[in-house]
Length: 295
Figure (tube, rainbow, N blue to C red):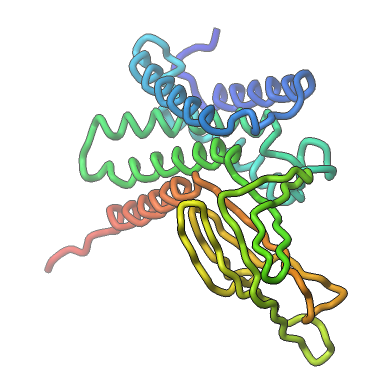
C-alpha cells in the first residue's frame, strides 16, 4: 500500500500501469474502433464522462486517489507521458492502413487513449476545483483546464463523426454520391454541379493552379455558387468542399473534377477549447506580470 501523500513517483507508476494495461488491451482485443462511437453514442459517452468527473470530485474526501489527481504530483507525470506519446505520434506518419504497427494509428492505440483519458479526468477535476473557489485570479487556470478538457474530449469523441469523402463530378451533370476511404458509396443531402474547370500552367507545363466553378445545392433549398480551389473551399451545411483532382490525361481540358468533402461537427468545440487555452495563457502572463511601483 502506497504511503500518503502520493508524490510524482506514484504518478509515474500510475502512468506506467496505464501503458501496461493499454498494451494488454491492444494485444487482446485489438485497436479501438472509433466508428462504434458515432453519434449519438459519443454524446452519451460525453455525458457519462461528465457525471464520472463530478462523482470523483464529490468523493475526493473519501477516496484519496481522486483528491491526489488534483495535485501537481499527478498532473506532471501525466503531462510527461502525454507529451511523449504525442511527440511519437508527430514523428510517425499516421495512416489508416499499413505503416508502423500501432504507432501509425495512434488514435486507435490503447496506451495513447488511456493516458489522454487520464489527462481529461485531471483537467476536469481541476476545472471544478478552481470554479468552486472562484476568484478573479482563478480565471487563467479555469480557462486553461476547461480549454484542455474541451479540446481533448471533443477532438477524440468527434473523430467518430468526422467524414471525409471524395466526389467525382462531370461538367453540367449534378452529382450527390460520394465515396469513403473504403470505396463505400454515400448518398448525400448535397449535390455539386460543375460548370467550368480551369488550370494555370508554369512555363514548363506543370500545373500552377487549378480550380472549378461550381454550384452547390442542398435538400433544404440552399444554393451556393463559387470557385473551389485546393486550399480555398466552399462551405455549406457544415461541409467544406475542396478541389482535390481532375483528369490528369486531359489536364486543362479535363471534363470532370474530383472534390474532397469534409464535415466535422465537433470542430467548433475543439476550436473553443484551443481559444480558451490561449486566452488562459495570455491572462496568466498578464496577472503574473510584475507591477511597476509608483514613485
